[in-house]
Amino acid sequence: MNIYVYEDDKTLDLSPLSSNRATFDIRIGSETFLDRIKKLFPNHSISLFVREELEAVTKEKHSELKVNPKEIDEGMWLVGNVIWKKNDFIVLPDKETLFYNNNNLIGAFLSKDSSDDWIKNKKSTPNIEKKSELESNYCPYLWDILSQIPKTLLYESEEFKKGIQPSTFEGVEFLNSDNIFIGDNVKIQPSVLMNAENGPIIIEADTTIYGQTYLEGPLYIGKRSLVKPLTQIKNSAFGPMCKLGGEIDTVIIQGYSNKVHEGHLGDSFVGEWVNLGSGTQNSNLKNNYSFVEVELNNKKIETNKTHIGTFIGDYTKTAIGTKLNSGSVIGLGSMIATYGFPSKLIDPFTWYINGEKRKVILDKFFNTTYHCMNRRNKRLLESEIDLLKKLYNKI
Image 1: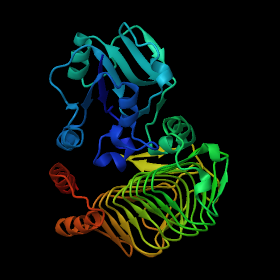
Image 2 (image 1 turned 120 degrees about the horizontal axis):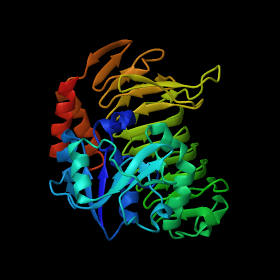
Image 3 (image 1 turned 30 degrees about the horizontal axis):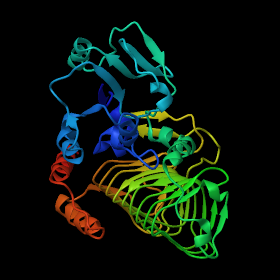
């Protein structure tokens, strides 16, 4: 069967992470939305549909898949920002069907003609009689992904085989060790407590965890990461090569970022190549316990949640002692160095210095990014450079 993974018309509601990546490339736990789809349909042809400005970078990142193909056949269409569940596809549909989750259209099984019409009409709801309510979770906002961390990591932990035995680590205490999965070449110093009573703990290969650290599941730490001494982490997921420290609770970091110093980070989503300076911390609860409002895509969103932190785009840096308010959104490529609390909404490529905003100088941005990535032996793709220039020129 043909599988078509597509972005719906609310992609920017997942900003700032969706500003420079397709929604299906956003991390949900140990994997991205798209990784989950690939594992659910290993023997099917998968194609991707993305915004025009993301076509080149998506093609370069997913060279094994078709991106925005011209020829379309009968197949199953899946919204990219859905945490898909295998139980919904035990039996594949055999007639045209619309898929819903809590009244949100999240996909469809369409004939070739219906697929062509759908693309032509920019994915307006097809006129299909059969409808099916699925258990898979639609995540229109980043905080919806955060709320699914316990279920996501519990599901993903089934894929991890028992790694190094706890007895290998002298002076390390494990609670519910059967729920702890440790990869190759992981180093854990004495006086670390790993508590998996509330969910699995997954530590990927070549990670180092320093002493006097408390880790509580559900928790995923990606390959070649570093956890500094006196760190407290729970209910979180971090991509590869992250440096972690301080107090972290209910956070997803896309990867390659530093939150290594003292300071609290909670109920937050952080992109790649971000550096949070020493003492950077955020509020995730208002003093009056009211719901937090977030401004996204030129509209104010009532989250209906009391615990909402900060959402930080790729390549952003904060200076020492930075304080971030509940519901703050910081666009990619920004730099914050200010007294007090900065604005809750900071546009991409913004220097926010002592309460004043000005546009980042592009050459300096690329120079800093080069040095930042070079420390981890990484480089920007040519398509990423072109995309960042286009996004910069839109500001």
